[in-house]
Length: 267
Ligand SMILES: O=C(O)CCC(=O)C(=O)O
Image (cartoon, rainbow, N blue to C red):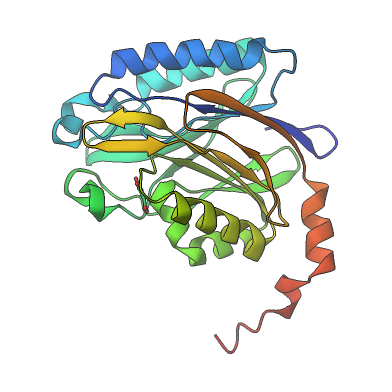
């Protein structure tokens, strides 16, 4: 992925997801993607929410999942190369011979897939572990000259994972989510903590709307390495835009040298 001069213009697509209706979700996403690139400021990188193709229709996930991500890859690769835009494609229910995974892809501006990550912590409160397979690798990518990490939703409750990505060099953390009510306080607090403790940008795209008995509050967030919220969506469908300056990561790490002060031999 490419950026200029450490600056990156982001567009997060916070959208409703129709659980169990991939056709409707593909149509909705295609329209939102066009909207994201049609404004006065073209984004460098677009971010999508978690499981945007199927939602949490887990009882039927085997039949609904996108086999090998083929439909997703065709749509998003063509979109990225047509518009010269990078994409952190949220996540989808991805069918593989060994089962269905909750998988994120990153595309560069020519439409090539440059990274993949399948959610490693399955969320038992929503029965994910009964229907999905857990990934077994952490998610890393390059955005221009910077390293970045990928997480998905529940993963943010595991600070060890964010710390590992930061120690491996990540300056940004992408977090697609379907984080429901009533845990807005957890969402905002955990994301802010991951940003402050790791002195990195946290870019978190949640869905909104209602599916069955679950409602989703949106509140997609872009948080800087000092923990300041530089962009926050409301509860409705919207495209959250912000420009970030990655040199802030080095400035914050120099000001409070947490990584140099760690005592890993003691803990
Ligand atoms: O951890 C939470 O409270 C929400 C997690 C979640 O909804 C998910 O991982 O899909």
